[in-house]
Image 1 (tube, rainbow, N blue to C red):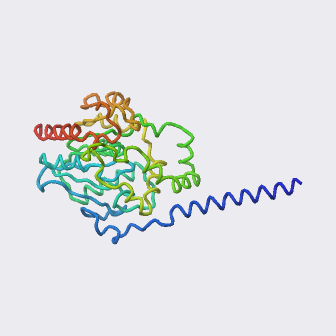
Image 2: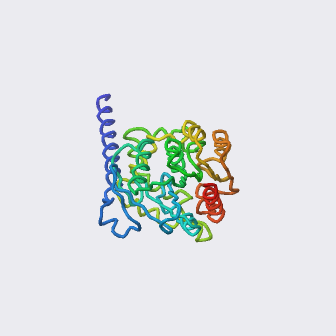
Length: 321
């Protein structure tokens, strides 16, 4: 009887494993390769770097002061459409780009870590031969990346503007069962492959529910999910970057002379409002603003208010120089 029970249990386990493997395979069977044919109609241009090909786009006239914008974890560079247009209209030359693993950029099979993103920023700036110190804007994860870059290369950054920057008090970084599972080998890969697309597209900030069309995302989040490598890049970033308690970065930034401004939202469920107080502790000289009712997508949902802050900040830096 015991022997029969063990055989039955083994069969059940084998069946479960086979089903899990089938579901994993089926979840990604229709993903497309991101090649030149797929990118034929993409806006902007492409830069070949040692880590992969980066998609970028310019706004505004050549010769104007340059502002580079680094987006966050999931939404590619179209997250900045309203902001880039406003800065260009105000007399700046704006560069947006898709992080490797996102948008129209390559999705290398690699470790997406602090060092990876710092190398990406250097490759982009050097590859486009941006010689003068730049204005830099970082949103969410891009805020942490930009702060780290400015802290390590202050001579290359004229001023830094942070939009709901990661690295302070971030909900997703709190220890939880889901967080532990997604970081676990094999199990995390299966979860991301099977449920990642649904979870990402189901987040309220991507639903374009704003009543005013001008305050919605100006791109399609689902488009990049058609191509292989996006979910893997998100997963690798989760596993290899620390998004909370990055006092090491902000303290080093505070010891530099780079002017800093930051905007937070009082209703942000991702980068919590308490982040503003923590940033002030590390950077008491920073210009900080709390937008009442602002969420994690405040740069487009509250674009009029955010654009006014962006333009005023960078124009003030120009006048000082």
